[in-house]
Length: 96
Image 1 (cartoon, rainbow, N blue to C red):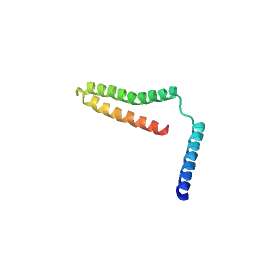
Image 2: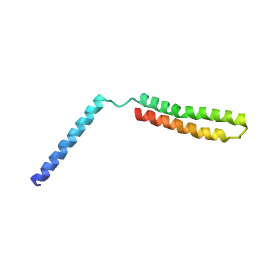
Image 3: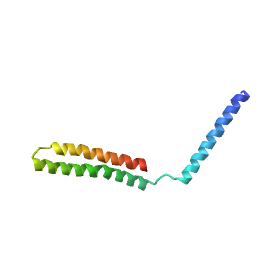
Image 4: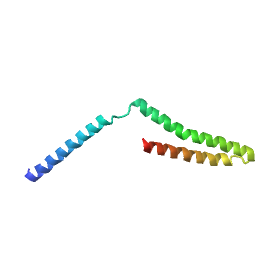
């Protein structure tokens, strides 16, 4: 092996060791959330999406009954509620 190749390999190994030490230090400073916390986050996300959809469906159904329009407003409000719920969930996930 040439000296240049050995130097590159040594540099690569030292860089890998530094990166591993940095990961370990980061894990100590900011530990992985517990399983219960992960389940809690999933529950929050679920309700954050479902609540606007259900509210929009109820509002759309009420408007359809008031104006005798079949399911026109229920359908439109369902889509709007889903869009709102997904936007809220996405925004919450970015903040976490």
